[in-house]
Image 1 (cartoon, rainbow, N blue to C red):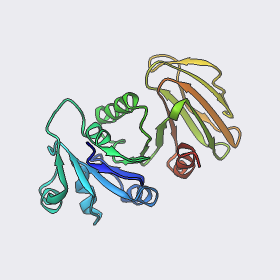
Image 2 (cartoon, rainbow, N blue to C red):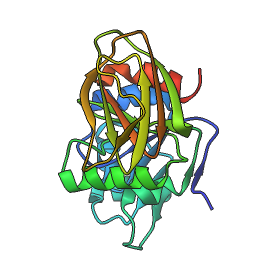
Image 3 (cartoon, rainbow, N blue to C red):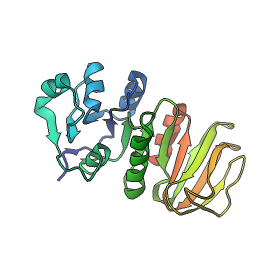
Image 4 (tube, rainbow, N blue to C red):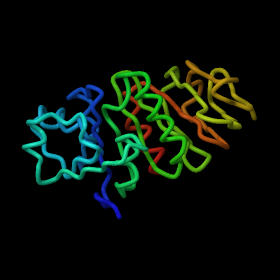
Length: 218
């Protein structure tokens, strides 16, 4: 049973020091606001109110706990992270996750682990330095400025074929401990990426609009 069931995109806020600028940008595209545990502290500081706060509540500050008491949804089990607790309890066509990268490395790696295991979910990670997402349904076409940084990072065994990159990846076997393609670049306005297996695409944060258009098939 879902805690949040929305036909609109959702902004999900985590506790890894999300910036107000990133939060504002995400909400302009995904107006339904949900906080993951301590992410509610950042929501409170921004003067906003979430539709729900989901998590084990072990990092939620007392002010946010009191202010948002009527929309707290504690999930007590410790087998999953707060990010996964939220992802499995939100139904939405798209989730823009803010405040889940750029903090502790183990937390960021745990988020990527969750993405790799929930490849059917449309999730975009937005941070100060990157906007990242898994290639959806095995194929995506991106319209991007020539010269823009684009990295391809497999989260498990994968096979990838691309067109439109400065350093082409052609029917290549990729793996987290093998071949990856960081700091590649856009060579043509249209970039095609075919992927079998979970492959993370990472771009500068100002590519968010392009990414949303591509992921949502606009």
